[in-house]
Image (cartoon, rainbow, N blue to C red; front, side):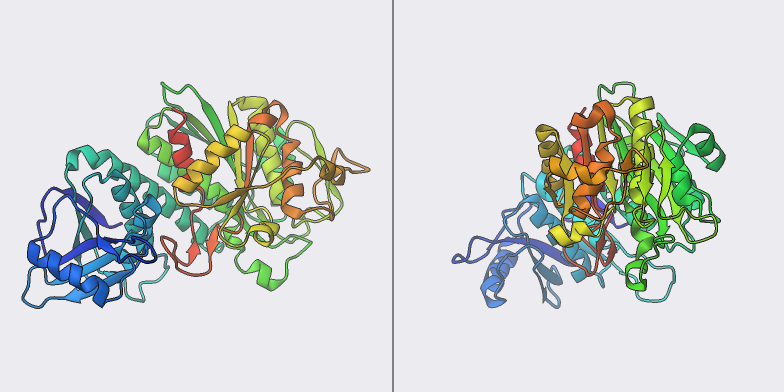
Length: 486
């Protein structure tokens, strides 16, 4: 990652970045007052450049001005929008791209710089993300960024939080982007073990096929039964001594999804390496909670399986016995994510007895049909819990929308041969999937949130702090929310 340093005075002035704020549709953009103002000469030059370059101050707008023989040699005017955290985050990502050929830049920030610092730092670190399995291609040259602030020591914790959040989001992106020729359940579990090593108060247990069978995790075993790479259940527990609240996070971890016997068409299958993005997000958020030493207990459950086609694959019409004893009839083997989640959620309710239960899953294509590519669908019966999590998601720069849990759709879950039908053909797809999962929440029903984040887990283009590919959606929002529970 980029090296970001807080300084009280500029140490190098080869490239100086001045933030520009949008003042409204009719008013011209203006320079943002900063902790270490530029010289009168540079300020006057920048002020004259704003209208000449037709700058609006919109977040992410960047203009470079060359000053041969001058100090600084290059001047970058950087739009921060209204100056909120997301505006600064978009600006940081734009700067990482605009200055990719520089090795070092200096950015001056406002006096009250906490919001600007967190947004800009996250944007720089996320906008510069790059995933490649080859050395071919030009890597960005930008290696160091100095941020000029009034109180470097006082703002150090803010920068640490931004660094940790970005590092964990990048980890989730790496896990999700990794091709499934490399990534299977055992590999994923090994990555979690490597990342968790050295963190005090962080405990890891990985169940393999034999343990899953002995303990009754029928959903995970059914979905993973068609693959030569056996399923796993990762249980990662951050257990600080001062925790007063216990949260269980559950993330869908299908390391590749063919659809099983109900096989997907090729266009729908080619990106199914991303079907474990929920597991990546909750694991990364738990590692982030440990790195930040948040005073809340967080247990992550990541049920991992490959949904493959073979003679041992589960069939349409099979009845699955889940952890805890509930059975479900599945007439579509491509509705596999809810089966592994149901096992993990039932285990959490029966054995872990947390205060709150949250699951994240790339669960349905219906998420994108309802809300487009950038919003997750959030379901909960608890208004305050839903509002708190939505607020944290929004503050972190992610997007979600609360969806209904209509009572009359529950009838679609009826089965003639099992307790539930897991893949009914009627009803709104994302809603019915959420209602199915609700059946496994037990007494935590009013303290549970389900997030269908299939759509925003992947970006088809580069915009703001997102790069094309896996987004790491959920890590930032979860960390913001967990920080409020201490």
